[in-house]
Amino acid sequence: MDRREAIKRIGMALAGAAVMGTGAASLASCGKKGTKRIIFYFTGTGNCLYVARQIGGDGAMLLSIPQVMKQGELNFEADEIGLVYPIYGHMPPNMVRKFIKKARLKAEYKFAVLTYGNRKCNASEIWDDISRRAGNAFDYVTTMIMVDNWLPNFDMNEQIKIDKHIPESLARITADVSARRRWIEPVTEEERQQHQGFIAATGIDPEKGFTWDSAQCFTATDACIGCGVCADVCPRGNWSLTSSGVKTEGECEACFACIQNCPQRAIQFNKEGNIMLAAGEKNPNARYRNEHVSLWDIKQANR
Ligand SMILES: Cc1cc2nc3c(=O)[nH]c(=O)nc-3n(C[C@H](O)[C@H](O)[C@H](O)COP(=O)(O)O)c2cc1C
Ligand code: SF4
Ligand code: SF4
Image (cartoon, rainbow, N blue to C red; front, side, top):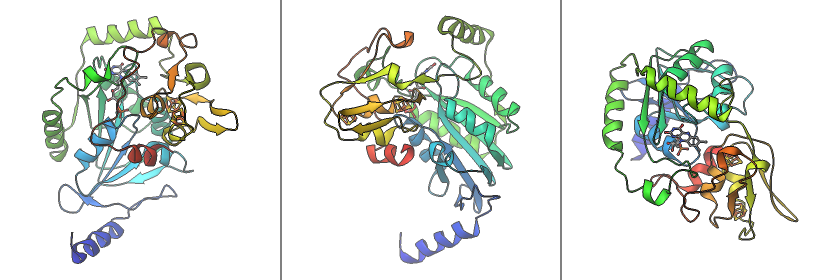
């Protein structure tokens, strides 16, 4: 980009600052000429950041939900507002749920992309219901299959070999969003029943989704070198370096950013601490981060 283009872009971003209240953000143009688009995202291993970037193109403003949640008021206005999150038990992460309840999102068009790895069930309907009840109804809700980062059931080295048709999904979603398609991805009765079965088997509160206690779920072995990556990638700030080693405590989003990004593979599940982790890991030697997303990107998004 030459200097003239850079100045033009900065000017467009400043002119596009149409944000209300103190949840301020300046907006950049994207997609159709002059359209202001914000995309919020939540990510543990980079899939959702990658999708947000791809759909946003050059001009959208990408905002990390863990970062914006640090603000007092969450009032945002743009022509188009998007949201990308990973489904956990077919539901949004707890922080995404809190965000949508607290935020006031004003846009002509709101779209949500829910990434998953293996079984989506009625995820689109769940989001439609949660966002409507929060007063932030979305015009378009779709799911998109990617690498499944759920370590108890999946070997990350095998997952990355599976063709999940990501370019095709991105092309479909980008075309839909560009056309401002109004559509909530339909679900079947069987998918609803599968989700109910999951809720009954796990005892998870469907109004909260996954909320764990990180001290109960994770432990760091002697392989830890005190690098601090876990502290930097945790969206809840649950990890700290102490004089006696690395320590974790606090309510956990179950995003797996810590266990997946630890360069020493020193973080392991406490099998006794959580029934969902009792089986341990499918392959303790395999870890995952989206190939287009750097460790630095995850740190920037979550710390
Ligand atoms: C706690 C947890 C629960 C998950 N639950 C599901 C699920 O119910 N169905 C599914 O297909 N994938 C599930 N996944 C996989 C993620 O939704 C998927 O890998 C997602 O793309 C990860 O996005 P990220 O890389 O942005 O964190 C789960 C992952 C985690 C960590
Ligand atoms: S990321 Fe791993 S090696 Fe680094 S401090 Fe945390 S547990 Fe230790
Ligand atoms: S402790 Fe690990 S799994 Fe829990 S919120 Fe932090 S990074 Fe995510």
